[in-house]
Image (cartoon, rainbow, N blue to C red; front, side, top):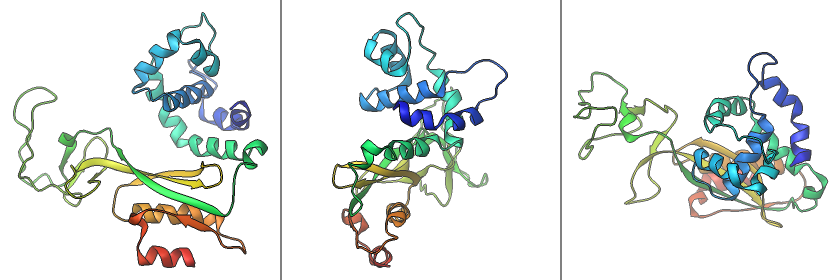
Length: 245
């Protein structure tokens, strides 16, 4: 972790202004975010509560025993900076480039898969793109009034979320509930089961195959043959032909 973050020091400096109020160090934000993923902590508020008393968390993040943890809202204010700088991808690349990690990686056999990621957008924000559609707003008062969408035709062609326009209405399978979602994609090498690439795309029926080609292509420019394992969602003629090419 220390070596990977050290390689990103110049990228961090470019994201933060040298003037103004001092911000929470981005290295600490990344360390805390990793702990949230490793320990399945459900919210950043709960993560900060855990950081108040857990000495192991404090040691990993780099906070002293008597030092106060930052407010959970710091994640919201700094997340856009880290996204714009593509820090997550650079961090993954920095980890994979370390000699001790390289020895664990194979270059012949890979697996790919996608997972549905629910957007942080309410179905009530999924409104008609055309204001003249005649769809009535939810009845009742307050910011979060009750709404019943039963019987209404709602699709990505005619509707869009007002809070997250990139989110798409998508269902995981037949009979499943449609939700505003994205699709996360991961490419894994098969020797040690390590993730070597990841990306996030809009949700549609072709996203998994397009993302798989994008991630595996840089690893296919050589003389020997490589293999790619995937589930039935990738079993399409055009995808197989692209892989062979």
